[in-house]
Length: 481
Image (tube, rainbow, N blue to C red; front, side):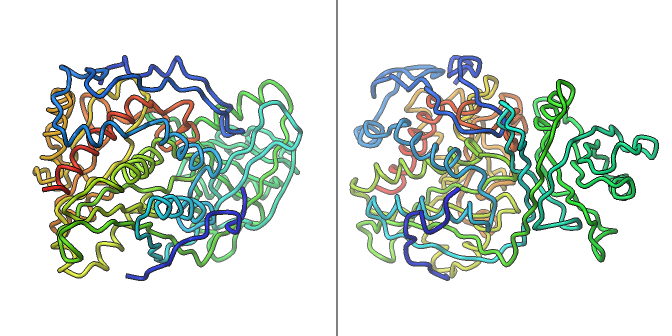
């Protein structure tokens, strides 16, 4: 991962049924879990502007204004941005150098498109991360970002052979644990006792393995908390891996002896950034504003291809298309930092907006997870924190009707947990848009928040194209009126 000096020079920093026919994952190439990124050849959308889209219920009935936007949108162009974010940069943890590198890349592209672009800084909590790798040169290419405990050894590196002590009871720790890295099943109520046993047995590192979640959900990598050790941190590194990594580690260890390196790092005194870009409309500097937004950070160990690299590249591609189409309202793009830590970036942005500026905003189109290739994710969800419709949901519903997707979109459904909530909490019309399971917006794809959230395993260019068309038509309809 290159240093910040290798990225785009940042701009000025401001203080203020779509059915399973859409790209079946089984047809996709895969990459080694957490290993080197691989270029994948995803099927590109092949429809003309007037063609019926996959999963649509009738051919589109587009207005001339719709055509101005749709004719220029390209998921292939968006994919090139997604490769940079999820493969070249990888996990983008709020406030760390990886997130800043992504912010600089996004800002550089928006600058290039001709927008007035700023970075809005805000403080975020310290992060504790680790790199788990195999120095033995095995063909598995094991090299993963995982979470590190703040209550154990930090800014250190150990290399040792590995043993699996299962549940980590007292009888599981034999003399064989001395000098080894131990794998232990994670149970929250027993974590401190297990960690103490590992130290007493002479282990040099501890890897907590999470319990499997109920499918389709899978556990994420995590930074284990050991409150009893806060005053006196444990002398060995303690890390938490993801569910998929747990199974991979145990399979590798069952097949042959395994050696691992654990390298922990404390990231302190952190600053995260919102990337803001706008193009003033014909109504002037005090006229209405239409916003398109997404968060660009990811969780520990996750490349974040769909969550939310997909929403981020939708914003970039729509910014490219809208840069030259005349509009009355100001078009503003917001790419939020540190969403995964609790909507921190978008809440900071809204909090800093004077009421007169809040009043200018007609609608906020928040895009979070808009391109999964998971077969059951056949419904395009309109999620409102209040559960009520507003300008954003109404315009997307109208665009879906024109594109032939109206039966595939949900009714307006109450749900927060994404950046639209920050705006609706203060009365600004906003909604979150994403592809999820048919029955409930809680039905998220298995790669969600995991190391498997990659282009190869979790991206459909067809769903991304449809998402761009829906949001593009809705945004332009709002901005031109």
